[in-house]
Length: 277
Image (cartoon, rainbow, N blue to C red; front, side, top):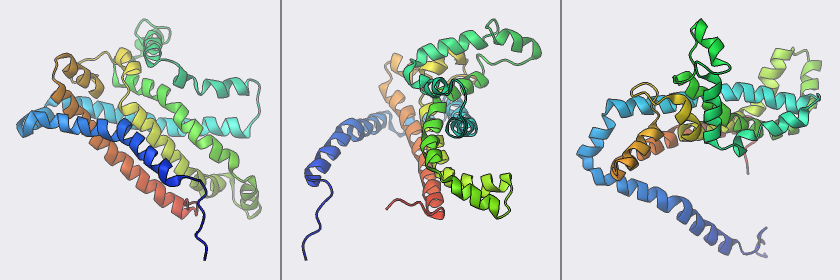
């Protein structure tokens, strides 16, 4: 029996180059971060992890990232639905604007959002009198993370929605299903893995975001200080071990959350019969 030929020639050599490149770009730097964080010792590690200021910053970074990602899942799905299912004037422009946060420098986005939602800004001056303060609050941080995370959800859901067979909706309608049942029982189960992927990407992008958040956050200790700012502060004090320790904590928490999302995504893929082989 002849040996089964490989789809790609030189697979072994390609795999070797891939692993070497991945090690140089990802594995070695991450390992260096873990090793550097050990320089503080167990006492220093406990001092950093028990600091109320750092705990507050971690809670703020992860909390706002999760909330922003959840909001992006809802409105990203609606935006992707409109771009795929409807034709309207300016559709190409709207489709191009979705990618704008990718191209726009994050610092510019932060300055623009601050100028809009500050108490004297174009929008903030109307919100302030009714008791809604956006800039220099967690609301402003969440808004910035929504801005930079929305493309991840739209671009993840859009191709899946484009490939979705509308005949399934017609068959469900012919069998007597109403619109709500079609969406909840036919469409959403197929889109669920893609929505989870978009959520994970938006969350991961938001946790480590610095440029667009630093201006609108206000950086008030115990209130609007994000974890990346604490890392920058430690670096400015030449406390490299402390900075890498905070980074390791963020990395471990992020990995745990993304691992859970990956498990849920795999379960959803198996349930819908779309498991990759």
